[in-house]
Length: 114
Length: 116
Image (cartoon, rainbow over the protein chains, first blue to last red):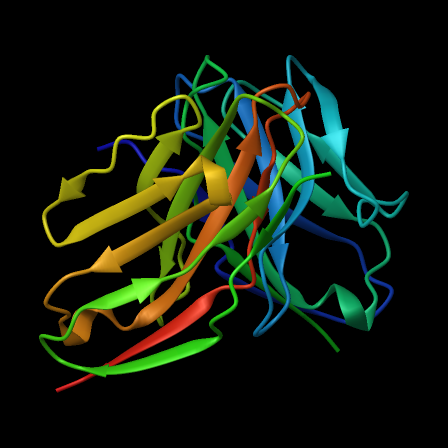
């Protein structure tokens, strides 16, 4: 069964450093998402991406964040200058071609900012 | 704006008991989708069930069943004959059809602990 994959599973970085989180969505999916979950809290939407552009972003997704689909398979989230409060689990999700399709999530990347 | 509320933060049951998780949502859209996701201790988010706003028929899928009532904006989820492996955090989520990216809005989650 096709699944969303994410690398790395855990990333530790120093405050102020740039990080890139990588995702490989399900191959025939066209809509891609990033969500964040701070430890013990609910899952929060960051950004949605379709047709090589951002379709919606939350207030969390400020200028420090960017997304890219550098090739036909990867979908990345970059944080330019990490802050302590960026420590969280980051989930990538993808869905198919229709508004009615379900989003499927990757296993997540745990980001720890020291 | 869409909002999802899960009033129960934690439920503890003994194996084989039924567990019902409450979910109340708010949306201005007339077409929307409701979901339940499971987050086991390993951390991943596992899709369980989905309901479209235009279909209020309640169903059973194995040990899972759900009760969708538009009149009260509720989408409750029941695990029948719970098992230890059901121990997880369960999230209710909402997606609006008219939204640009169909983002999911999650509730705060309900932690279910099933004791042997």
